[in-house]
Length: 333
Image (tube, rainbow, N blue to C red; front, top):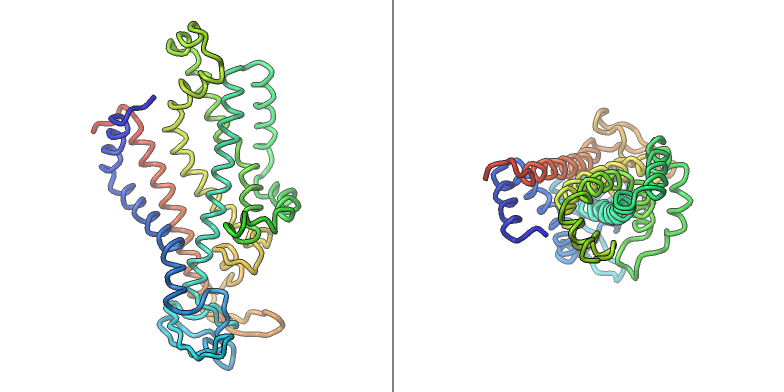
């Protein structure tokens, strides 16, 4: 099992990579902004990202721009003055900043659920196939090849919607917004074969090592050998793969949402925000129809979620690359 000193060496190698450290800081900042700053901003500003603000749009339903103030009346009849740092989001005049942070939280929650499920299934099936071999290896390998032969996005569209709809109302007592858990579970079920192939190859190589043979000679059961002797050697590669799978899940969720197969429009996500403002970044003030009304959308409404998505995916990929180098024993401290 990896000792504390070995992980300290990994950290020393990792922090030498300034790009990876910068990416880690970016990810930590995004997590803090989406999970900590967003609810605090709602309390400070007195409204949330789903609340329409009629004064945040003009007579032509064009949303106000960044650094704007808008007055509105809350349901209890009190008058408020809202500060919209990134302006409004469209004809409803919702706070673009709060929707961006709320959408980021939803996208990251889906990535967490899907990546965790993919790793759990991948580790279990990969270890089973690699350690026991024979029939178990053949079944897992053929199933992996079968799933990898289909385009993942088309498979999600064809089969994922039915499964996701069944979990639409499951929120784990309000822990997740509606639909998040269903999309995360469906994506995780269809992504397990990537870590499974990695675990299978590593376990097949490790089970021939002398320490595994010694454990068998003293009568250690197979489950104990896998859990105590093989699993610690899988931690490093799986951490790297976890960052790559997470970035891929974020892109996949955004792709499904753009195609209207992801999180429902009532729940903000980066993919939904991209779908609602598709094309505004390339064409200045295009006409867009919503509820039968024509209104112009500013290009910035497309820029913010696209930039957040790009930075998050890039940061996860750079962290994975930095961890891969840090876990390489050939790297110098």
